[in-house]
View 1 (tube, one colour):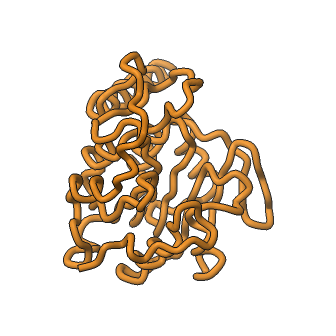
View 2 (view 1 turned 60 degrees about the vertical axis):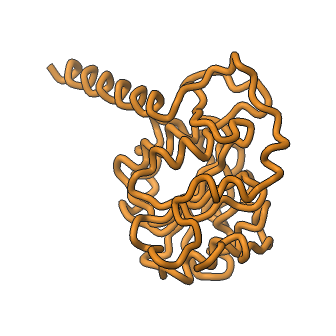
Length: 242
């Protein structure tokens, strides 16, 4: 049984995600070798780069400030409202090998919007360590000007990604790895064991807890908000066609 943190290796990533990513695909294999990542800045330091530099993956990259045709980096500000359209315009297949999300804001809502249509085999997500073990998500459409106020907790991801197994929480406690169910059965130590995967990082307990007045929701409340907005959008679209 493997602890994926034993395989961490820093080549292009920030915290050694390169080695973890390589080991996951060594275990589960690849299909179309397509990776989609947004929030990559100029692409020099990102989780998927090890795959498109060293393993012949085709990358589809997005950032709200940078673009570079040579590495297929498109300049887009990804939102809940536009992400599916942007994926469609850029010919993202419905099933692909890797999705990486790191936009320091509405990661939770955008990821769940993507998963309504698209089915990546592996997902790398940033967590908010200031939420510690709590099930917390930022409120949608709130101004993000409060320092370390972004994204969602590991617990929130674990509670809602029902079609995926939690396989790793990297050693710094920032990024987590999910793999489609049954692909990693029997390979990973502490598979889906939130307590074990969280508690292996003693440094997480040094993070300052968020203020009580942070505008946050539980993961279930956040999902209900997404579904409520979807229903409203469908209602508005139906009225336009009448």
